[in-house]
Image (cartoon, rainbow, N blue to C red; front, side, top):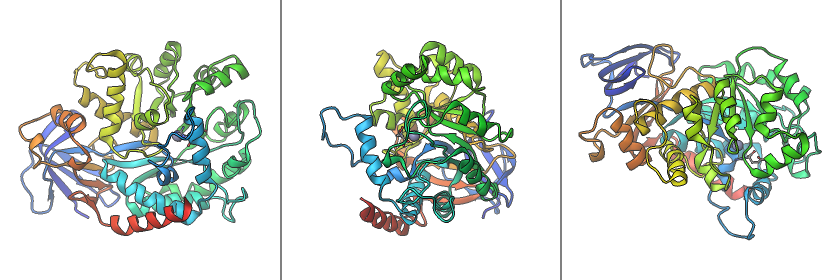
Length: 453
Ligand code: NGQ
Ligand code: ZN
């Protein structure tokens, strides 16, 4: 483990700086940041612009196994819901070993795409027969182990999934591997607390959706701990979900949540696609993070989150790769902006007072992502994890550009390939575009997928 790195140019909280020395301790946390530093024999000299690593705030790791295989028009009405049927078929087959092998390779690809930590929204808990494993946390531990093997930070979000629809509807047979009572759920949380106390790990609460939990269940989970654990929930992703919620309660999902639950900055609302202006304003005011997953939302035909209004209201956002049709900070941020351009037939839609779109998108999703993961990351600053992304300083597109134009080149004209080196918690996990375990992990992934699908 190097003790320090020197960046020719780095994105610091106060702006871009040159010749930046970044020192860190054995626990992987940054202990010193100093611009204008002299060259040093002890430090690793980075060969390009250095950025804070991006948090990936939404992942269902196992879905990587089917990414790209549901793009066949089998039904003229293909939708989110027919995709979900295909996804449930995969759910009906996966073993713990397979989940670990799928997640391990997925996380390697995530690192190569510029993400240094992931919030794993984990709801595949039980055996193929729907019964808990001898260790009910078996699947959760597999996911943690995959993250450790890949070398990515993780916020584990074991999911409470209790019902199959609004108002406590019984789950379907396909959902049996997800189901827990509140008591079982709290025990699961308790049994994972120690494992998630290690550096680079965090444990959070998670409700699958308002389709899967009742208000009382949310209250009893939240009442069990008043600490600052992050809390995630899927919400208002599909029009049918909004219609069903209205039919059940007379309120839209986001309205219902804000009417019944004190939502604050611990919360991350995943998708929130179908948000009306009053809902957008409530979300922004609550300081909760909007967990946007543009490539998956496009892939599943969800709709477009009203990001312009949300940003104008000072809302906090972050990005996730969700179903993993793309593992790329570039693609998520680019499509977040492009969705708005296509809809409004204008350019440069998402920005702050600095007017720089790429600069805004990258900084905002660093901050929102770190908040959603509940981890000290997202900025090159003392006390934060040494999670760094080094772009390719030799790339001709990056020659002769400085400041936020570096981000503009990477996010709007570049590719994952511009990610050269990645450090997580003070360890290089990607060097020269490669991860040390990618070949071995790739083989294990392919074997697991072959057996499972
Ligand atoms: C999920 N995924 O839980 O994996 C969901 C689909 C559902 C996304 N929404 C299933 N992307 O919401 O019921
Ligand atoms: Zn999801």
